[in-house]
Length: 274
Ligand SMILES: Nc1ncnc2c1ncn2[C@@H]1O[C@H](COP(=O)(O)OP(=O)(O)O)[C@@H](O)[C@H]1O
Ligand SMILES: [Mg+2]
Image (tube, rainbow, N blue to C red; front, side, top):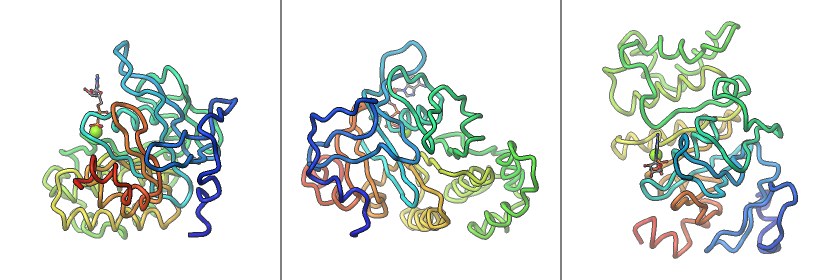
């Protein structure tokens, strides 16, 4: 991949080079031997430190980012802070140090609602649909910030997830796990986001359904929406990832392209089951 923007920086950046603005280059992660240039990232949670309320810091200098045309994947053990990092980027917890930037704009102090208005779509790990509402009502709820006609977007969502069209008048709670996740992703798409954040979109589904969901996610990415997602199915997710982050105890442990991480002996041994 000669047009990989990360190729340019491979191996020729010193870990000691500090960015004066406190932003820009993610330190080389162990095992990858390279820095990733994140300064121009489309969406970035940059060296975030913070936790819940007045509680202890969960994130420590944690950086996650995604660029146009990319699928970026965050993996790591249970409790590593993956969901916390996503919530921090979405504005759901206090970032005590670091910043969040979208398309060059510092949005660190914006509420989640304002971030949605700025173009962020977020599908949380849990409680991501209204179970007692119909599929179509869920999609309508997703369009809550829009004042324009959103029927075209709904048609696009139904094209992407035909099963949702079939079940549009059924309560979302009656759907299968994979179908519920489609509702959740569809709901987020209803705002026509500039970037989509997904926290474990394949949680609790069978391997076949997981493959199907990944195919749909790739399809969404191809429409031009960059995707930042957390995944438990690390190996499969890294296979479709342009960029991968391994988080451990709230810190970046390994960073690289999906391919690099899949090939890294340390990552394989510790996080991919050998
Ligand atoms: N709402 C919360 N309030 C306080 N602590 C939390 C909350 N949610 C998660 N945590 C703590 O933050 C840490 C990271 O959790 P989480 O981000 O959910 O991990 P992951 O998504 O990687 O499994 C854990 O120690 C967890 O107990
Ligand atoms: Mg989580």
